[in-house]
Image 1 (cartoon, rainbow, N blue to C red):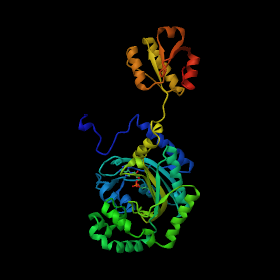
Image 2 (cartoon, rainbow, N blue to C red):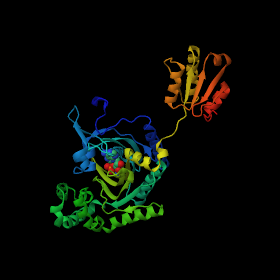
Image 3 (tube, helix red, strand yellow):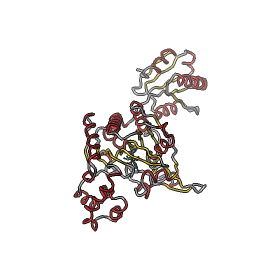
Image 4 (cartoon, rainbow, N blue to C red):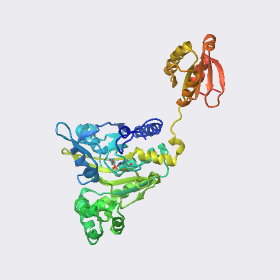
Length: 421
Ligand code: HAM
């Protein structure tokens, strides 16, 4: 067992080869799809003024109240390590004003929430997200969900479910809050402590409480949409109609609330059975965020990469292995061959061949072991005889077949398919 000092902080992990190959593949697929839909990348700072998150996410949300890494910097300014990506993107859009109207931005990077770590729940986790800035129209929400489904399929996922609901508009809130409060009144003594508090602070959250008793009560309540205006209900119907037109199956879940306060109209969550109790693979929705007197509206989503990986491993184990990469290992018998191989290694790399060699001057056996460890698919072996003849021993590391070749053939084989026999 390695010393405690060498372990990363609880809930945070090192990401290194070989697992990183799958991460990189997911990131590549995401960039490809985002670009096809006209999204460009944004990289915002990981540290922001705390107010950026407190105002946008809502000061009674769990993320702000319990999970955000919040501290004063050396100058006494309140700062927060970003718990999600939307608020920072909106700060950027508000800062740019007119120049960022109709911006379509995506982000890939680490987020931080001080939650109790468990499978699929980390303190440093990674999101791939996208935000489409602009006016409220159901087609934009449907397009966003369609892009997300496209992306999940591209990554190799099949067995996911999309739950959709509406949060209505701020104008609906009084009616929704009053209606829910009346319906909950007789059940208050049976609610958990958190939910009794939520009745006054954030009543909608009672609907997605994880406590079994609260869940049972929530199931008996009228749906939130029943308290909303007709136009809010029509907006959701239009999103659903367009999704049907695009042949995307969704489940309307009237209990879906989402834990952040900035949402208006459409909200959705994507779940996957590989994830157990933390089954949300991704979440998204339309939002309206006011920051420094500017109100920005948009629609977006974010997917947790750690959870995507758990899901891919179940749905498509071969894709989960990552791309097999061809690699050539150069093996030298004697000092002269070693120096010639050093030159050859650079020449091959300039031509785009992945290659390596043992640099410490060890014997043949150790060099062949290093070749195996590197996962090389081919070895090029040279000693004095080959140097004199101007030839190379080319060995297929998979089936062991070895052939003698001259330089033109070596280059041809290594730079074409890298199959030797
Ligand atoms: P969220 O639902 O809080 O939404 O997070 C989105 C996804 O991030 C979750 O579905 C989950 O996959 C992943 N995630 C969240 N917390 C953790 C954690 N502690 N460990 C591992 N994965 C986690 C948002 O963050 C919104 N900004 C999404 C959005 C974008 N809405 C509109 N635009």
